[in-house]
Image (cartoon, rainbow, N blue to C red; front, side):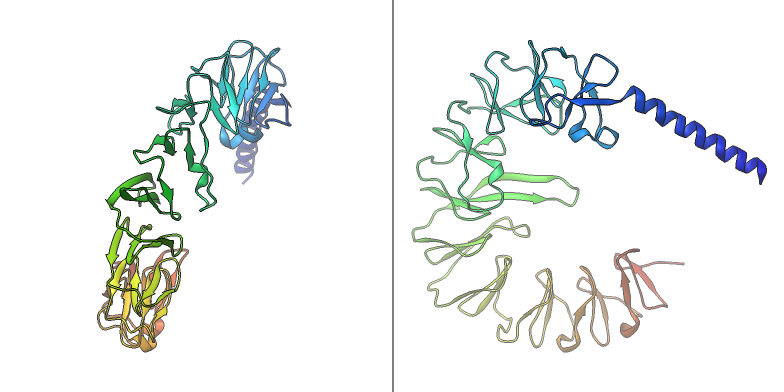
Length: 356
């Protein structure tokens, strides 16, 4: 035990010494101008400017600039300059030094507007953007306004010029827009692999009629319902006449007492007994649905959901729409910590039996 204790002490001393050395080598000094940025510092020892995002160099990194510390100034949280160069996140940028400026947090020079690029260290030119008139397009429609911009002749989403009719283009809600000729879906979603899809996509020719936003993902143009949300990129449904409309939540509405779920019609659902159970579950007095699909043989009267994917009634346990075999329903429990479901006899991961 004594040898083990000595070894542990030596390891701790070596580890602690490493971090002490690192602390003094990578050491932040005073902020260049903390009223403008908390990310640029004078190095405590070296004659260097360092960039450490919000001062958190330990987790977010640390960059020593090739900059003149005597002339360095901060322009914004991530931007700085010396007498010769412009820096973004500590990296020298290929911009016009003499005319570069930050306009409402938008980097510009006399020739170009620039976008922050998440995949590399250099700003990218926003094609066709006019720096004199380029500004935020804030209509107050939604919380995605930070992605929208316009100049005197174009609209831009996420730094990409939109091919729309400038004079008539109009955002309806979070996910839909129109111009004189077309209806557009505004895509802002995450895929299962973690990739974010963003864009404004032309979908259908615009029909005539008064435009009315129903909620953040549904709208009406005359008697035509349009939708775009994270489950259904776009759909349109034409009605002969709309006699009644009720909003249940962002994904579910009733038109003429018929359920519309994620832009799909469910004519067989009894809306008088309809219950929205959870994000992907709903039921009426006789049937239960998961993610737009009927769960075969599920008993509506005793049905309950246990997680995003597991549910049960008095006799059965289901993974999504599939009944799990040989499971005692009353004993089945799901653990969010282990992502396992079990009745104490059989255990399942992602709906598949785990073999001991």
